[in-house]
Length: 141
Length: 118
Image (cartoon, rainbow over all chains, first blue to last red; front, side, top):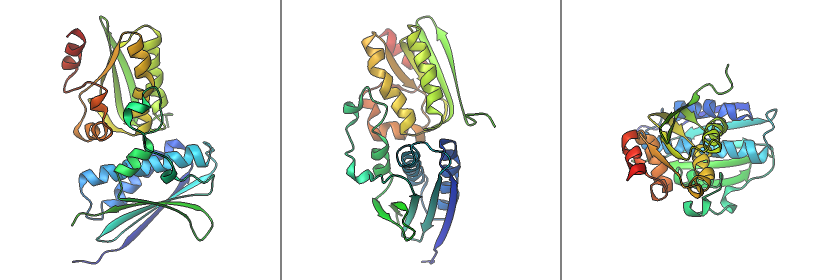
């Protein structure tokens, strides 16, 4: 099997207007991997949700802050890191509610879409002390 | 650049039905525009609503949250929101989250209208 490893990086102001830029970036980068169309769509939504959470919860919609997205892949998996320096937000501590329990509420589905679009979510702090959410999608062989 | 380049929403009233047409990319940035259009209809007493998604290319939880946030209000007023013409990749997101258990998702606008008169 061909051995391929590639890394892509994007930094944008923490503004929801840039969610479209982030989605396009993730697609452009991940298209170089062997990811399928369905997996691509689910991964893109998961990253969108992760970044929207950073903008809303980590940065309280402060568009002067910076949000960084790294996409890395090899033949086995894609990893997308969402990096911020705002308030710590750990999606793994949030319970994904059933849809019927969310009637009347606008929020609550983002965490679910992040989990449905990935195989693993990891939260840690990078070498520079920034919050890092890693979304891991294993590639079907 | 316009505020919400990549998303538009329009509305048409037909008898007691209101048909809302979201177009483009519905995410955390554009969801407020969609919500405003739906709320304008509801506040005007238009609660038999079809959201025709034929030109909707993308939806994230913020867009889905607009449906969830106002469905109770609409049903309490004796109406409903029905969703039609979903493109396969957008339909997949609704299905993943189980929207088909709470909403009528129909292939066409006419099918959705038929559900109101049934």
